Image (tube, rainbow, N blue to C red; front, side):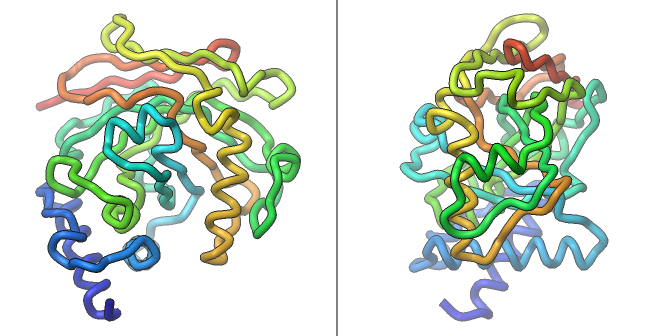
Amino acid sequence: MTGRELREIATALRAARLHREPIPAPTKTWPGLDADEGFEVQRINVEAAVAEGDRVVGYKLGNIAKAMQDAFGLDQPDYGYLLASTFAYEGTTVDRGRFIAPFVELEPAFVLRGHLGGPNTTVADVIRAVDYVVPAIEIIDSRVENWAIDLPDTLADNGSTGAVILGGTPRRLAELTLRDTPGALHFDGRPVMSGNTGNILGNPLSATAWLCNRLAAYDIEFAPGQVILPGSCLEAVPMREAGHWSGTFQGLGTVEFDVRTA
């Protein structure tokens, strides 16, 4: 696929995000788009955002849990940059109108104290690089009509990123058992979904090592202070109504926010 075509896809996805009007899957409009080309589209749009004043503050891994792959019809994880403009503050109100078809996920977030990345990254490398873990909610959103995505589509769409809310209860790795930490999402006080961090490739530390090794092919590494989202531990829940969301991990804490629809 030519560079001009990749820029056309990037422009179409930027317009869809700006106007909150989804487009047909890029793989339908531009047949032959593969995962590497989808990732190049992702980079084109991130570079455009940075040129306009945004900032890369981390990276995300998505659809790592089988429940998520089944829900969105994928058989491989996706991944995308985290931009500062997508972060919202815990306890504040998020406007549903910012999104097209959002879903809410609960996951741990790693804040790095050291450099991380490169080929042959191990779980030990991840442990050494992580400073804190905090509970996080990711709002995923697709610029593709009806979430009818293949892997190249969601990669082109920056891993279907929407917004990120970080909790304010940092914990050290030694305080947690991330291969077995139960978590649950609540909406207006009612439980709506539960899961376990063990669903994130057995351990979210392993998922982060996987991400480092995958992104090494694109010469991407992570810097101290950046945030890594290793993926949701439970099936994402549609965010349709106004109300109060909270996500809690046993031993890690709670993160919460409100949604308005008008």
